[in-house]
Amino acid sequence: MTRRILMRATGQARPGQLAELGKTLARSGARLLDINQSVTFGIVSLEAVVALDHEAELESALAATGTDLGLDVQAIQVSAEEYHRWSENQSQPRLIMTLLAPRIPAGILAEVGALTAEHGLTVELIHRLSGREPLDGEAPQQGSCVECWLRGPDADILALREKALALGAAHGVDIALQEDCIWRTHRRLVCFDMDSTLIKAEVIDELARRHGVYDEVAEVTERAMRGELDFQQSFRERMAKLKGLDESVLAEIAAELPLMDGVETLMAQLKRLGYRTAILSGGFTYFARYLQQRLGFDEIHANELVIENGKVTGEVREPIVDADRKALLLREIAEREGIRMEQTIAVGDGANDLKMLAEAGLGIAFRAKPMVRQQARQSISTLGLDAVLYLIGYRQSDLEA
Picture 1 (cartoon, one colour):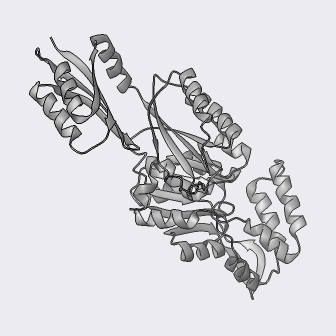
Picture 2 (tube, helix red, strand yellow; picture 1 turned 90 degrees about the vertical axis):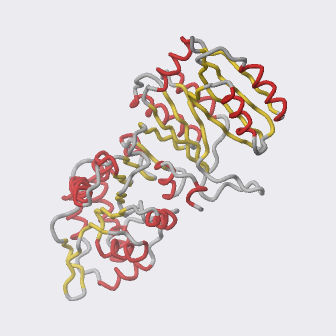
Picture 3 (cartoon, helix red, strand yellow; picture 1 turned 180 degrees about the vertical axis):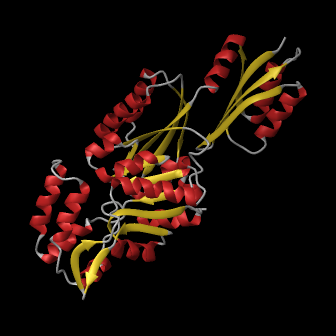
């Protein structure tokens, strides 16, 4: 009759321990069913589930080997019922919960544990993706990020995400929730909104200020937010107020565009890792082209200002890039490049980005208004744009290699 045994070894880590424990298991004729090992501050924790199809004194042999190695080794019998429950749990879908913040308060762990338990989920693994805190106690440059693997029966993901969003807001922590799948760490296309996403500005507002019509443009924007105008109507009205603006102002504003925190780091890593990148913006190609040259985007899609005799005419060439067109462009680029939609990422901050975020395999609301954060599947508000890399599953140490 097959016996199943959980071996648990802890103690001061040193080379050769795994080899000696492995030899002891081999001499007993054990079969390896599962194994996990970690080392923290020089303390090793090794767990292995093994099966024995014949009688063997494995427990005493492991204890003797542990003594020689300076390890506390336990051999725990696993009943057939326990093994069956464990196997069933491993076959259940996995969720990935990611916690991001400049610093993650320890107190949030209890509430995360309670929240996951409430939804019948077991925390299978917790590991850190961010770099270690410097010795001087300063917050890590790329912030703090912890990833939790959750398993359990079908959970109400929408309800869990809503509660996680509220919990994170109370602690100043972003909590993202994704269904684990093969595509999660195999994304290939990243599309960005521009204004207030790649740059810390709304270009049309900057143009209006320089032309002395900011209050008029802001009034049109407010009407659109109240639902009195759709995007295309409000866009055309705002554009009309820029008629006569000197083209030289565009160059001056482009040269002064404030880049979003983390965008240079993110773009450098995405290019290094082979991602295709695009700007899908309701702003203007003049400024998107400037960012393309500076940061290396593969392609840009935005609104083309009509300029005649060195002056802005107040018109743009068709088609206008609105919410529907952003979503369409995302699909078209993916199809053209032979990329599955599950492998796409979209990042934006506004209501006109929501359709694009919904279409993408991973849609991220970045420093967005509450309504957009509520509707988007993922959001980042506490860190810079390079935190997108954490949601893809990259470790800081991998990116520095």
